[in-house]
Image (cartoon, rainbow, N blue to C red; front, top):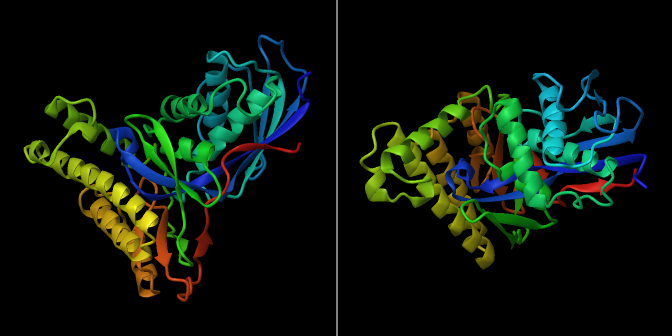
Length: 354
């Protein structure tokens, strides 16, 4: 029989390197973190089996929502994620039941650590499980869930993101980064062995949302560049062809090509046990995001400089840009500055004991 209550946890992520490459068919190297979102689902009467009522409570905000999937009008904020997840699951044929959802989390919102993808993934796992699936992947394969969550982000929330965040949340593993090839849609684990070095996060203080920032504009610019080059994605471009693009499309394409190369170099540096090389790659990635992709802010630059003054061997913004968090790499004997904290790779999304 279906469970009467379930709980699902989905982590946020830190993207070690490979920014704005996912929707361009490129490469990225993220890892799941300990912080994330938990959704507890309780079966309850309300509506019929074919038209179940979902009652959702955002515990951290003191807000609620109630709707019938399929009939729910568009909504803003966190409600868009809940309504979108339920509607997309119904469209995919997953069984849904009337349920009360309690949503809580400890991944900072707007800090570039993918709180939105953590919310989408936790919602999907909880709704799948309370709907009658016997485990956290029986109704849909994990890559199918990643695609579904991306549709929630794109179509319900209005952020034209790729699938990096969702894949990182679903496939994460302890002490492991994920080399994701978005052209082939493959995920290869990479041991995140730093030999005593540490990765740390410092919040810039600038909040950002994908839908409300320049993120969608950057994606549109990349699409226009592909159109002018006659290719399907910037993964198929080369330096000679992009040199002919008008500004700022040339700059955007140069970033994507360079960032793909930096992902491969970072995998090689990790495999060879060369953290100093990894630090230089973080610096190069940040410079490209600032100068070619133009997604930095004064607060971001101040936070990067603060990490470097504190002794970071490399630092860069993470996430879509226009605010959020800064990632720094520190040797084992260099203290992390006040306000920063160490991040480690943790497990991917999973069901909890209810």
